[in-house]
Length: 208
Image (cartoon, rainbow, N blue to C red; front, side, top):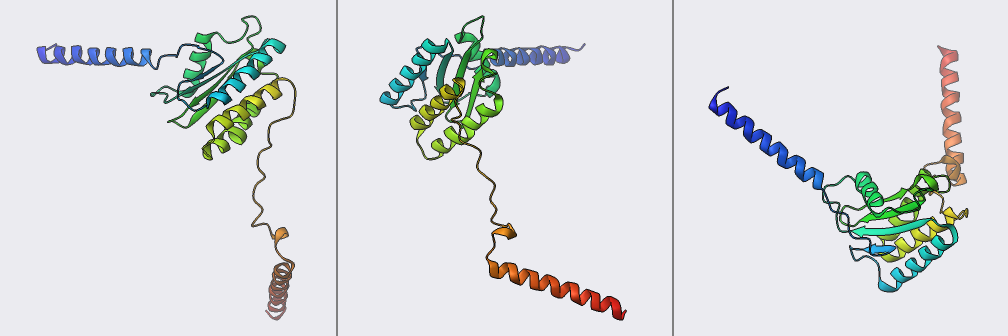
């Protein structure tokens, strides 16, 4: 191998090593300061206190441990991988039951996730988690009500874990183009045109 080739090889190995180290480090997991960890400053103080009290009551009643984390950005991390890393680092839930749950909101990335422990998946399915995020948190966030959306989402999580049907259903698809919703005059006009076309076709077929 030539000297130039060796230099290129060493340089490539060094670059790959740096990239690997950077990827391995990733975004750090914040310190677990309580049940609500609002590092992105999205939740008003009074709302944060109410959420904390609700989650404390849930833990006392059921043993399930739920935590909320808001961050400014994922900093390039994959949402699913980072939420799992946080849940494992914080060791949410009891080890034997694996009944921990993390609500993660990444403000600048506009991403959110409910990381549900295996012990709670029977009470809160992936479909239900998706409906909580899509039908409760996202609409509130679009209106700029971050604290209210997070509190409402926490309420839905708590209710669902306790067996209550509290999640809003998915919105029904629009039927604006459905002929059954059209005024009667348009229905009559459509039917008249249809009969005229059919009659003209039959007349043409007989004369052909």
